[in-house]
Length: 326
Image 1 (cartoon, rainbow, N blue to C red):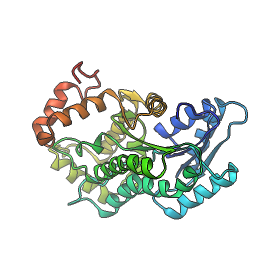
Image 2: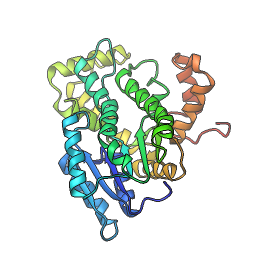
Image 3: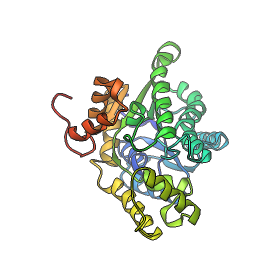
């Protein structure tokens, strides 16, 4: 799909981050957009930003929907059909996601399943729901956001990362399988999997809110659990008050957003350029390119502590340009 003007795109998780930027940039290119999020105020802001840069007649609609809930997803689809007066869509960006559910062994099952249900279930349910409208289009493209954790299920040797990684591996495998499925059964459709590295978004902040773990609102019991979890990572917090830890967590989440090597706007531009170029695999960020290369070079060592040490030496987590040999 070499151009987006006059098309209709669906973007999930459009209230912030890459989702918001995809909506804004698509609308600026003359694409009608329907986006969903669980935060109505964030949706309103996205619509305001998108319509401010869109041409006359470009329609941007916002819909409150939890992508892990099929009833809400189907209501979102029906609202899109009604408000855009159409029976088809051209683009589906399955972008919504959160982080959480780190340990399968000791963390809460509810957090694990909530993370997996949004990050994988949202992709599955939205693709199911919008498939008839994609099939009805003369040309369609499904763009699923996975992660570097879709080919490296780790945040390093001292942090469990199971729910998010499992979901992102599922997204990657599903999207790659769609390539052959579409070629055989719907040749007018295409699929791309997006593999971002560290992008400057509010995913850490938003994930805490979705899972009931906003640093400012943690209960005494949750604080005790957090202290225990951080102690297992070798952090001595005996001299820190609960308020000190809360402030530290908030600062860390804000730094993830504000000090990233790539902004959400830059990431969205890379994604749209990849779709236009017909790339089925869209790596976003120098860190993603470097990490992908290193995992391919040493798959047997990928989960050893020394592998993370080599990544640090290569600058994978230091926000530096990738080496020429990558």
